[in-house]
Length: 621
Image 1 (spheres, rainbow, N blue to C red):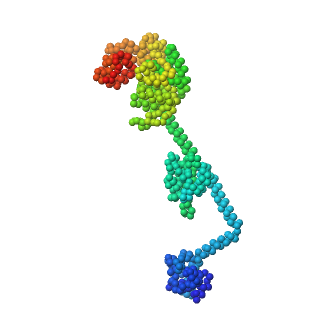
Image 2 (cartoon, one colour; image 1 turned 90 degrees about the vertical axis):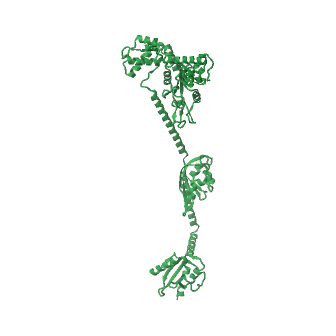
Image 3 (tube, rainbow, N blue to C red; image 1 turned 30 degrees about the vertical axis):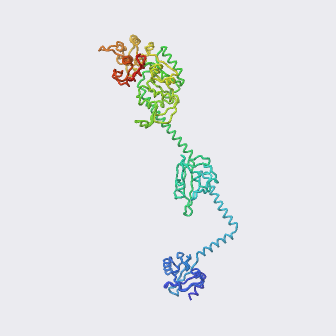
């Protein structure tokens, strides 16, 4: 009865006795599917055909018992030959046979094979036209993809899991100069990404793109270089993204942009900002210098006088001011050398810029080079910031070197080199900066005497003495005293907010009779003192103290020039006494009670030579 039931079914069918776990019957199709034989062997336990699917089959039977019928594809069967059989099981109990369940089996492998054959047959039936339509569809899809890639402004290329190039768009080819034939199927890192910009080798395993197709990382890089076919680098920023095929990592796509022009603009902007900062610092230093140089009222606002000496100075100023010729101004202390330098600068084309004055004798030897040439931070102990020197501050304007002969000889050599080359290098720096300046120098000694005494290098004198101007002392231009006194007195009274006293003929004669060893500077001081003590009436000059040479105690009053002459005469007498011996026992330094170095400095300062004391050569022993 059971065998005839299953034999009548066209599909593979098995009747299972769930109480005894026995196969109660099956047809030929089921026997071939599960045993590989046309006739099924007798007395087979059905659980032996379930293998690891036994728990799922038990659950399935409970569902059949509950619903009365069910199907599943989750229960796999194992044939007697040990092969896995993928099938769909439909089950229902037999109503007249308690405990028996009919299982109808559908071989899924065969079913899928038949389905594929049906689809293939359908395609074949559709003919060549359908095949061509599909081909056109995919070709059009590929063309549209290529159009999109080539329309992109960024460079785009792909690499597979081995680092070989799979595609390169037009923008990438144009930026890199390589053709598709040069790159496709080749290791693109070795072609365009092999070195850093500084020349160091760029190993592939350190490359961010490598990390994308090997370690599944998205990387964004802001500044690297790709190498063009002509060997030139281009600065790029790029993003490398992993590519997957059904959750399998197959490569990466790189999107990059040429930022060479942007980086160059950034560099130029950075340099421009640095230059602006330097100019700002220079202007701040220049402003600070000018603030120091400006007093509440200048004593000299113009070159005053009508003497031939003053007229000659004005003429020479008019001649040299339109040029950049180096000027050397000589004259005694207080004769107005700085005033002449300022007049030249104001009449020149550089008058819009500052005239920077550097008093060579007013700076200590340790600081003089830093003040003149500038410094960078860390150039020497105590240099905590960058600082331009007077040479840099005068760039574009005028540099006035006052008392040039007081500059140390080694500094004179460096100054000459700087002026000749037109460049200056700060202390502690290696970069030379261009200079454009007009140089005016001044000194109290005559050029020949300064060189002969060793205070001024001869080669520096040759450089400076292009256009000499000599300032005559006040005692040689007495006719200028009345107008000069009136001019200075008016300035002084306005500055001190005093009533201006009257200059009498007697006062004028007093001033013209006086020798004025301090020249115009001394005249200014005398007039300032007179403005204070006169009270707005007739001027009261205190020249009597200086002329009489006596004070209330009977001691002589000496001017600064007279004191200098006395010191020089005393040094000459001492050297004559010691036969020129400076240091050591019985030397001039010991007789004067000063250090030998101090005495050497004074000898150089006063220009004392062997011919002045006419005894043997200077000795240090």
